[in-house]
Length: 230
Image (cartoon, rainbow, N blue to C red; front, top):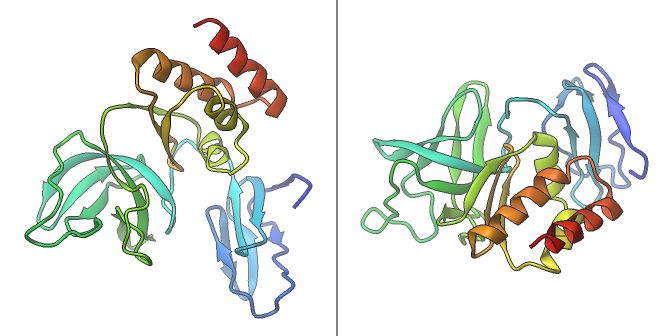
């Protein structure tokens, strides 16, 4: 979609695709009833033509888990066959002990309380607490998911988090051209950053926070100004 489309609850969404039998993937802010897709949250409608994925991005204060989304969470404790993880939603999430690449009952990660993890929401519905996994269930590989060590975790708006996950996130591109760093972005409004040194990590964090209301040109200029102060 080239134009920005703002929707409010109750709006019927046009999800027509070139393939009549294409499977639609509905993300946060949308629901389907009686063959029609409608909005249940106010925000900007987004669509990915390649995957037939539709979702609404708004600056909600609380994250509502949706299946398949990446999140950054903090381990609160261990019980039974899994860990209890805070992902900023109304209910804590469950991370099973075996939900890691190559994990077995004899060989599995031992996370401590306070550990930061990058995970994918594997189960999300109104009847159950959300469930996480630290690997891609289709490939069996971690693909970047797992415990995040060192670095620094901070919070941002849910809208900014989703924009950072875009392949065209201007602030991350501008930073990457000048500063080597690692980042894990959760759609739950938490971002983990590791730039090697405290000074560079702080620079990356400030740049990301400052970019929320900037366009591509402004983001690049802001990064240059921050680097000039180093």
